[in-house]
Length: 202
Ligand SMILES: [Mg+2]
Image (cartoon, rainbow, N blue to C red):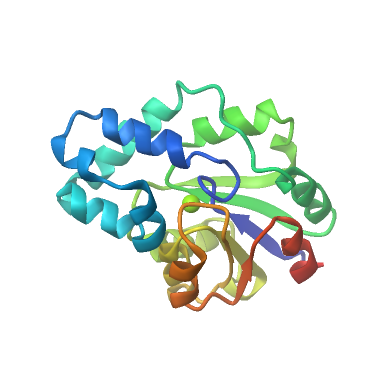
């Protein structure tokens, strides 16, 4: 049985950190203006949500507002070297994407880079603080045993979610969170560039 390598999207595959922050700042909420870019890297998304004062029940709408604006950006770029990693991994593994971004946005980028066919599935779910439930639902939907998946993500909440879902996690340092913040959650693996993913898995 082929194993699965499942990737988070924003911050792991594509460099949307500044795009997302600019969108949030343009939402015309004064509280968002106080957000400091480096603070998010060091304190995480939980900090962003707390600082913005947005109530938890409004998060799905907030995610929708951000992702629908993100769709209009046509300059979204893959992180360098990740393309090669997908190509190599797809020879021996099933690849998937799990994200709170919309499936449409993700497909636009995959099509642009002609790599749509490398992925078995794209699982989109906007519950950003229930990511462990998202991972569990994903496993059920695609009939994957959690022992047969490795999840690759860029945020501390990705590590927390993977552990709760009993899935191995590779945390990447080129995304939204600092290495220091990621280390606090003790990921199974921590990588500083995409090629290191191959060293771990292959
Ligand atoms: Mg991410």
